[in-house]
Length: 146
Length: 146
DNA sequence: ATTGCGATTGTTAATCAATCGCAATATACG
DNA sequence: CGTATATTGCGATTGATTAACAATCGCAAT
Ligand SMILES: [Mn+2]
Ligand SMILES: [Mn+2]
Ligand SMILES: [Zn+2]
Ligand SMILES: [Zn+2]
Image (cartoon, rainbow over all chains, first blue to last red; front, top):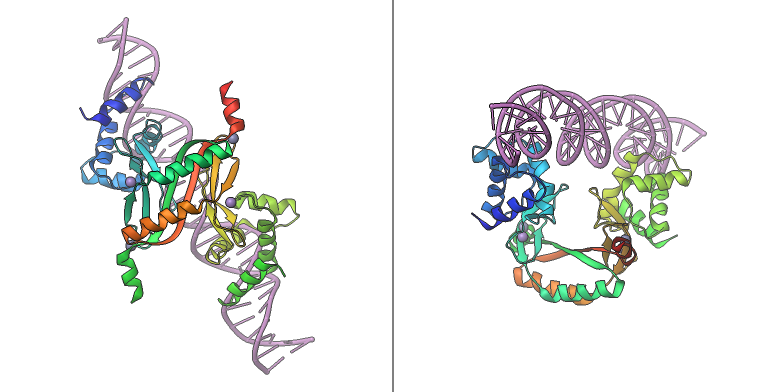
């Protein structure tokens, strides 16, 4: 049994909820790649796998996945929320190309250290550092020059 | 004539657009405080000032304000976009209390330096660093302990 | 002052994502 | 099994944003 499967199952059990076939299928799709996704792209992905799961079911599952730490909301360039699976990954942040949507990840502990200090100074207890760099990737920059 | 007024007027003129009474009224409301706002709170604010400006007009103006650098989207705790006026302010980031919505600002050039380096390393040209710290403020932390 | 013309506005209708209500199934557990 | 919940899919509904449109406005050229 995969790590995330075990973790999510026990999260559900603690709430009297069930690890159903649908939920398992959705999680498998989510953990099959590290691509960021939104409800619609996930739904499409499931269709390609031959699964007929209603978007309502996805919408209903997402809050549970967030609360259990399976996924988190990502910084997106679209207007609606996007997510990425989180469980099993070190904290990291993103560079997003505003032209092509390409995403690069990076990790910088120095930044977290600094932010810890800021929180302390201001009397806040940090929950999450949301950091996204909106930028133009090298490929798109070359395009733009033309 | 205020700084932002002049700047926005010339932005509009360059596009063959007009600095109308409605646009001026909306901008005055926006620059009257440094509070973050969304379309609805701005609309309420205008009502309180005795102005009857349609939300459609606000929705139509916002992209122009963003493009001209008058405002920018802020990191919000709600599901819909919120904004803050930008013109005339040094770049800064936010701590947001997820319980009461209180916002604190901070500036950390060290972080920007680090991010410049990250962008260089990854070949991205930065447009904007979006950094928001979701946290619990000291007041709310005390409440929670009870 | 008048005219012409594109920009602007408010109203109303259309979109679109997200949520809800409910009847049909599936699951847990004694 | 048999009952009590939880879950699902469907379709309807909501709420925020956008689009269409017809009436005004702003402004520069008569
Ligand atoms: Mn990532
Ligand atoms: Mn601010
Ligand atoms: Zn790109
Ligand atoms: Zn608070």
